[in-house]
Image (cartoon, rainbow, N blue to C red; front, side, top):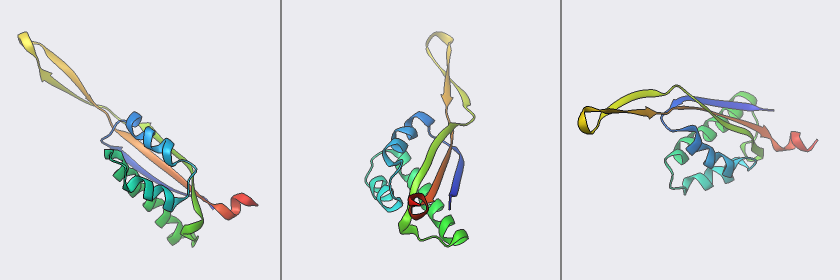
Length: 115
């Protein structure tokens, strides 16, 4: 049975977090969490927390064994961009775009996939 967790308005660009998502896509939950624990990127902690949340949702709502879960779909969509300005030389200003993203992870039971 599929379970899902979503987090929105995370202050990291979708491009940066997609690099980590590509590493854990298709892996078992405990293996993915272990990989992200040792990753040095900022997004690793955010992604680890999201995967744990989805696993917890599966255990609480569906009663699925967490050891049999794997990451079926994981993706990052772009959120709204915070636009700021910074002063520059000769009275000019430059636009700073602070990007946000919406993250989604879908877990599935390995046993149901085999059937």
